[in-house]
Image 1 (cartoon, rainbow, N blue to C red):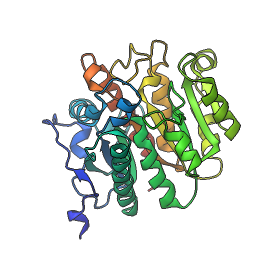
Image 2: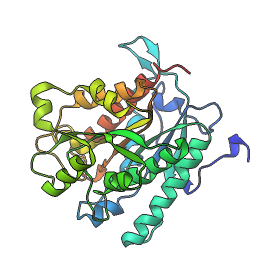
Image 3: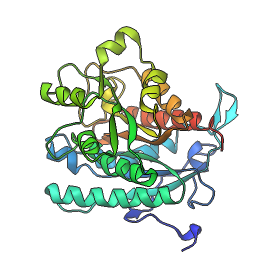
Length: 317
């Protein structure tokens, strides 16, 4: 199969609304030829349902593309340079369609296969979801492609190290599977009253770092310091759960946050992550357009995507 005919397994072509002239979205490519990154939609929220959350995040990738079709030009006014990264739109994962734990695991296997195929083509995969459990198979594929455990940053109100199968489990499973080195794992923006003590104790016993939102309110978010930890011994990732942000900024999430971080913190982290060569995966998760207000969260997701791209433009080819 030639590159021009390539499609990652278990994916469907993305459906875009009309893209406004001059928007960044018009630069995305339908072929992987010459592309350094791939955009992949993780259009499933079964994991959220299994954890008793509100459904709707499966619509995140579609709503994200609709926002990007309207918002953002391929020019960085602050840095006075073009956003000239070649990005392949790999479309959306087709969920397995079955219910329960078995259905979730089947969809995870599809995500892992798709990300592995994109990595084989030499592309860094940028994911938009979808339940946060889908970061598990994506990151497992990245780790396997590199042959080493990853370091990482999770910007999130929740630890997501639960034993229970569902959207709250990804980082425990990644640590247990040795795809994630817990000594290089930093959880930023945690809520004071939304995580079980046992989960927090488990993470710290593994060597992970937990930073609550209150500490960031007091001292600010030092994105570079967190990245230094995550990337201290090799490749790493950054995952942003949009519920890390205050619900006044991002109402369209699976679990709204009444005292979340300001958008500037997430924006700085996204751009800093884009600029670091060690960052081999970036995702924006738990975007739930069913509860968005006037497209606020959709535009936030599009902005954070563009911030990462702006950082990526600073990397050498």
